[in-house]
Image 1 (cartoon, helix red, strand yellow):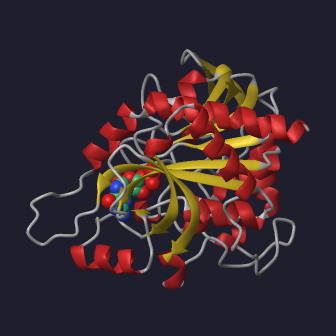
Image 2: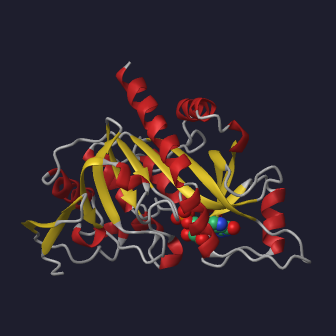
Length: 321
Ligand SMILES: O=P(O)(O)O[C@H]1O[C@H](CO)[C@@H](O)[C@H]1O
Ligand SMILES: Nc1nc2[nH]cnc2c(=O)[nH]1
């Protein structure tokens, strides 16, 4: 598709030509080129083409954003933008991440939904991986809900369980890599943002209420997520180290999105679907693999869809009070 000609697709996949773009080719190479004005222009591109004004932005994790039956398919009155048609947007390279930004109604709540996210191991710098969160912000989103697939370290967790993230350990940050590195534009947020209250306590409370209402408390936990760079899964020594650090689940995403969201004043919430148990035993022949991650995401899709739909409704009702 010509980069100068964006396409929008409706929920049935019908493509329609949108306004031509001045420059829809590539993201700027340097973080310093990714200005507030550039993000504003991307937000404006979207606002010019959709009528709904979502306050809630959703990022779907591995296996939860794929084919028929996924969350984005549940949106009504939807308009979707394949990532390659959005100016300056990265494109996903990972199976299980479809690559569409969908606007629509979940129940009766307007949302925008990233069907596919960006990971550091794909070769994008972290700021670029998290750039869509800033686009959400300038579209008018106030609440970020991110989901991910993760390996479960906590002995009590089983495959298929949900972990509401209460905190994270940013191992990429420890290694000197953070989405906020580079010049800071105060219009997004402060140079040194506090991150200790990243996972909103009120939204977590609502999520626990939803789990009770759905009668899934037996599979729902609250815990600490750690991000690693990937794409290789962890060694046994690494898993043991993470366990000793108090990590309950490990993955390769979400933290850069949440940091970016908090930096620009968005309320954030995230949860993990435990798609595999982390291997801690040298005698074990088990090996994690991306196929089982995607399969578990698909299996849990109905539950997660309902979980998110109910949570979104609670957030919206709470905002209206
Ligand atoms: O975090 P999400 O995008 O759900 O994906 C998780 O699953 C993939 C590994 O199977 C990694 O990308 C990991 O981060
Ligand atoms: N790093 C990491 N990411 C995952 N995503 C899904 N499962 C895993 C895992 O076991 N480790």
